[in-house]
Each structure stands twice: as structure tokens, then as C-alpha cells.
Length: 193
Image 1 (tube, rainbow, N blue to C red):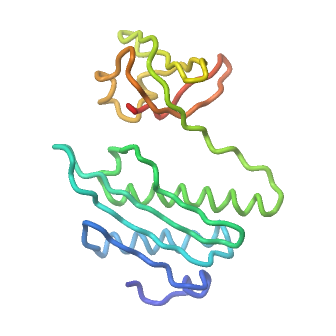
Image 2 (spheres, rainbow, N blue to C red):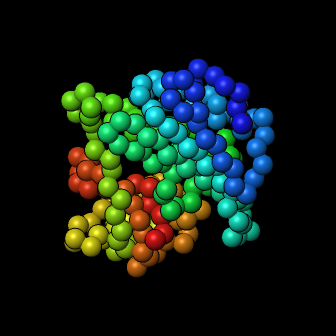
């Protein structure tokens, strides 16, 4: 698909690009090529890379959400990006979906490289499930009860989309990312389960 570049030599094998449910355009190919070239900065020994850009069938009246899956092989492990089940409305733009997936891949490559060199790496945030146990809707915050009995504070801004606030109520099952703050545990990236 892409003309041969120094990237093929650096990666040992030319990167594979697959499009599902959409056609490639020069703009998309240029964005992918630039992001693939950047990957070598984060890990110098990538042995292969397969990128899938996918436009799943539309399930609702809203815009189509693009998914970008990246599988990277490096000595000592594999890196997979883009397997999260949650829908990100920003990914209605294929270029933003590409940017976000490659940013995640770069972080994971950097972590892998640091681990290999004995450096400490920040832990990956833990995704949990729970249900809303208290909600102060007029003030824009609430609490999520996790299965282990802990409660997590969240704000309206903690939801993955502002549109979800009106659908959240006591008893709503949610997924979220766990954090620890000065005043205790709190949730971010909150989405209905």
C-alpha cells in the first residue's frame, strides 16, 4: 500500500494496513504513514506492526464510530491497542481515532522499552464496574459503589460524554477508571456498562 521507506528496514517487515468498512483516502494514508514512522522513536526493535482501521456498521442514528486496532510485536512481548469496548464519540472522525490509538501505542511502547531497561513504569489505570449509589444531580456529582464495597466519587465531567448525564441515575450500572486522590478514591471515564 505505501511506497517502501526506511520504516520497512527499521521494522524488519513492512507494516500492514487493513481497512474494513471504509475505503482508504490519501489523507488517511498520510496520517497513518506519519504515525507509523513515529513508532520507532519509542522502541527501536519493532519486528512487525498490523493496523486495522474499521468503520463498524451503524447501530444508531448518531454518527459512525471508527475503531483503530494496532498489533505491534517487539522482542519480549506483543502490544495490542484499540480493543476497548466503550464508544468514544470523538472517534466519529477517523483521524482522531487514528491519533488516539497511536498515542496509546506510543505510551505502551515507551513503557515496554523502560521496563526492558529496568526503569519504573506508571501502572495502567484499573477499569472497574459498579453502580451509582448516590446522585446529587443538581450539583453535578455522585458516588459509584464497586463490587468490593468501596465508593468512588465522580463528577458530571467524569463521564465519557456529557450527553450521558441525563441517563445516569441511582442504580445505573457503569464502567469506570479507578483513581486515588487526596480526598479518597474517585472515578473517571465513567460510562454505562
